[in-house]
Image (cartoon, rainbow, N blue to C red):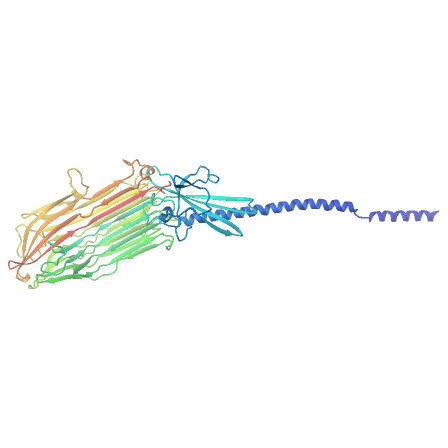
Length: 620
């Protein structure tokens, strides 16, 4: 009885263990597999969708890059190349172009609704497929159709013609699910809206335009045949003997690119005899920088005039010898920089100008000139005497340096663009120059044994000639300024007519003509036997010119709002003080009462110029 119970219990345990080891049934396995399949199918669809989205995004990014590339390539080409039709036909496959009245028009309604402009059709060689043309590019097994359009936009209110550049890139792929397109546009406004093709080399929107110029106009003395300057000088052989006085200048142009130039030139002399020119060069300094993309960035130059040899260039004939002598001691500097520090940008007071903040210095050019303390001049020497040279004209040196500066300023300076709050970030164009000329004497009496009663140191004398000129345009610009001082003395036959040059510092106006002249009557200076018993008879005229000052703008008057005054047309200030004092003298040489030669002496004492221009950016 007891054994039977134990056996029954053991069998029950074995049956329970067998039941526990039975596992999943086939139905359960099939259900589980079905559920797993559904989940994996959903995940696979998500992965495929994600890959397709990534592929489309990548293709759109590529198409956008191709459109940008097409426009940038267009911008880098000359304006005329891009905007002028050349008789080509629209390329097959170009979309959105229809002909209306014989004129092709670009109407991309599905892409750019409402856009409708005449199409410029061209197919230039080198670097660009052309306007109204198609270029296919394959990237990653996808073919992209790049179509470029240049169209004529409506005229501006000022009557200027701008152009619209459009690049449309279309493509189709398994990921795109049909044709896709991207479009980019840009405005081309050069040179119709820009002022300098040299400073706007690209067909890109204009930037604000700045120019500045300042310096000394060339001055000097020239000896020629008084009756025909192309013929030899009677009694002396050569056609021309010249003495060029020191000069310096600075110029600046800014638009899409910037360029700055400065130079200084000391006194020089030259003789022209037929096809041969013999010169005695002086010292020269020149600095030139630009910000063209093909140039080295951040250019800066500072130069000092080279050394030179003093001496005389001369021509000799039967009447004696004429010479142009250059004095020593002249020197000068020239500096220019795209980002100019105060060490480069020196103002007319001799102090450095701050062109902008330390991290945003602006372009500037500056030059200085010290004429030195030695005199230069024209001399006549009789060959049959032993008395030496006779001074026909002398120009003394001076220790006061002449200066010129041309700058774009965005920082405040005590000498430049101080109106209102100053130049600010908009900027101001500044051109200014100063000079002090050494004393000038024509027909000096040195060595003469016989002169008219009351005759002084010379026939014509200019002393203390000092000038300044200043032009500004842009934010902070002041009205132009020109000053002149000094004294002119002209022999009138019995005494001297004295002219205060300060009274000729203002432009011509009613009661103040642009120039005034004083005749020099025939005046004879005699020289003793040591000089060959010769006489020089002078006769001619001396003229003083007033400066010319012009300030123009687009409106009838300046409102003070730059966008109003300087948008449609540039605001410009020009000052020209050239020809401050000029003279033309004929000199007749007699020996023992017989004419042996004659020559003419033309003298111009130069003057100062200053100019500034500002034009608001065309798309401002």
